[in-house]
Picture 1: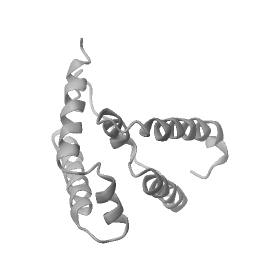
Picture 2: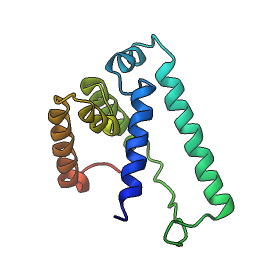
Picture 3: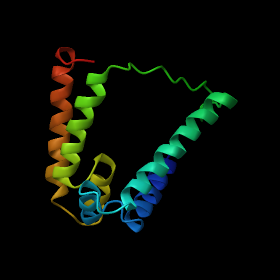
Picture 4: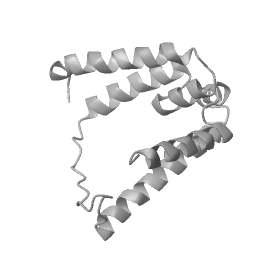
Length: 137
């Protein structure tokens, strides 16, 4: 019962992404071909909102729902992790037509071929876990 709020937020997020066409393969295809600003506007808005949220959390020392301090550890700024990770993420996004969140939304809208994509993403995550100690971080 205590996780019901997360389910409702997820459902709301899914509806917003479907209605804004952010999970549309055609919109994603347009983005990768630099034919439309639609997806860049959505992604840019999310980045701006996220940055403002993190700034607000740090400025006001906001606590979590459980009342604990929110810890935001500094990130390792190596070029390799962002360059290679971004390329792999972008290639997967372009091939699948969806990034990780919308995969489940598309499955929920009846695109059952996303089961293959979700299985491949899960397998890739498992492989990363096995190879993590050998990769540049």
